[in-house]
Image (cartoon, rainbow, N blue to C red):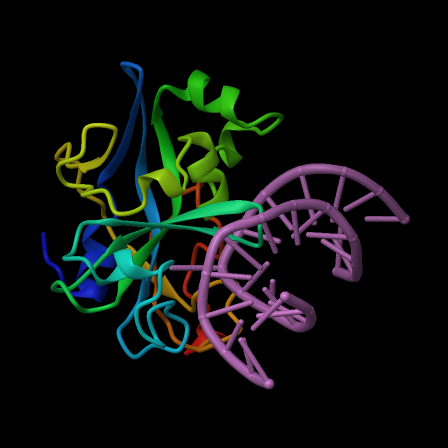
Length: 191
DNA sequence: AGTGCGATTGACT
DNA sequence: GTCAATCGCACTA
């Protein structure tokens, strides 16, 4: 898989995020990502390596998991070569397998919302800081696989929820997917 | 050692 | 639509 950040953010669309807990598998197809570049003020690695963000500097394919707003864990895939602080945020999945198990991990959410949003998808798959630093291409509890599915077209928009570099169009999504956490179409006013 | 905040979510008007 | 919860950590001193 390509390692450059934007290329990885696009290449991850359509791949499957798999979680295995005590032999039980839950999984969802990645339908929405955001790129956080080197030298990007919105990237957590912008001001250099810290205890929290060190996984962003790992070779591409490693997990960077952090707690956001004290309530939600967010999962990123590190990008680029080792030593470069950049990554791709996973913002939404289309539920595929183990849906009953995922619903047990979040109370009172409809199927449509189960893995829609970066904090909900980690809750549904029980992902937290313990998974920080794992190699997502080789790990046995949490990994990204390719089932041969190919997506039709990729939409782009500005990233969601940012206070810094909010005008960069670095959000990518499977066009038309009903499981997105933000706009489904490119808004002409954004161009 | 103290302070302020954020790549969100769910509850509520 | 608005708004508070909640906490690890980066920043300042």
